[in-house]
Image 1 (cartoon, rainbow, N blue to C red):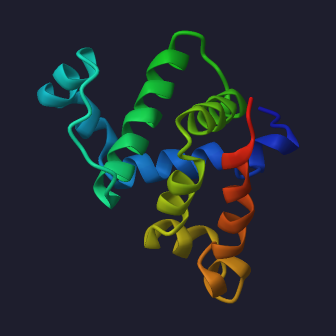
Image 2: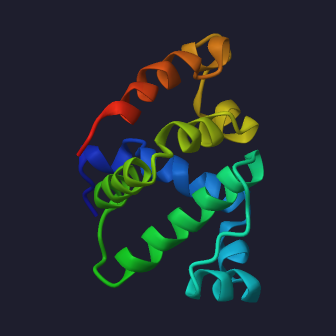
Length: 135
């Protein structure tokens, strides 16, 4: 079987999926109380670190569920993630949550690299500017 060069590239969506797996996203989204809360549009969390994590897990689960039927690729999933994050005004918080996870940082980034040195702070400062953009 011949594979293309793009098959060997690391996709950002794969990093997001790994975060989802590490944090138990499937179990979280399939919990009966979570399904009930989602069906009624209830958000029982405040704006704490836990709610950022929970909203992120819910968003990833939603993207996986809606795109599963259409067999979309990693790029389409990532575009949906960015659009959802921008619409929810949570892009910065979600990226910070993902890339500050120790297992993600250790596996994909060099300790002396930019992420290892400043903990993604430089990228977050740039991304914060998207909050003022109106779509």
